[in-house]
Amino acid sequence: MSGNTLTCNAGSWTGSPTFAFQWLRDGVAITGASGQTYTLTAADVGRQISCRVTGANSGGSDQAPSNAVTPSAAPNSTPPPTTPPPTTPPPSERCRERERQSS
Image (cartoon, rainbow, N blue to C red; front, side, top):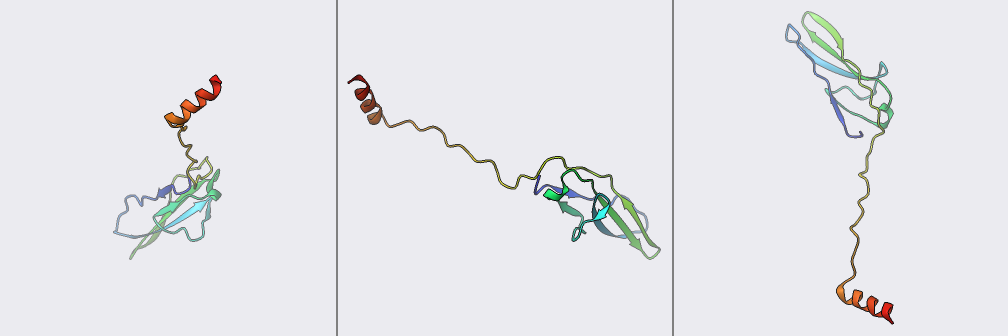
């Protein structure tokens, strides 16, 4: 989950506003998370993550919250280890092994 990115869509507004975004964890602003996208962290697991959009123009400003999502798995920042395929001894070693077994 680490590295998964959420995107906040501003939606449709009238009056051609400019937009500001704030990401929330359980309703509390996440420090430094004020862009249209947010990358999930381990602190987000089991918490409600949402985005608040503020639209502003010459007529004023208004806010709209997004629906919350709740990440349910711990982030995996490292890929699982790969297991190398089994190795087969070269033919000459296999023959020596057979000779040892038959002696």
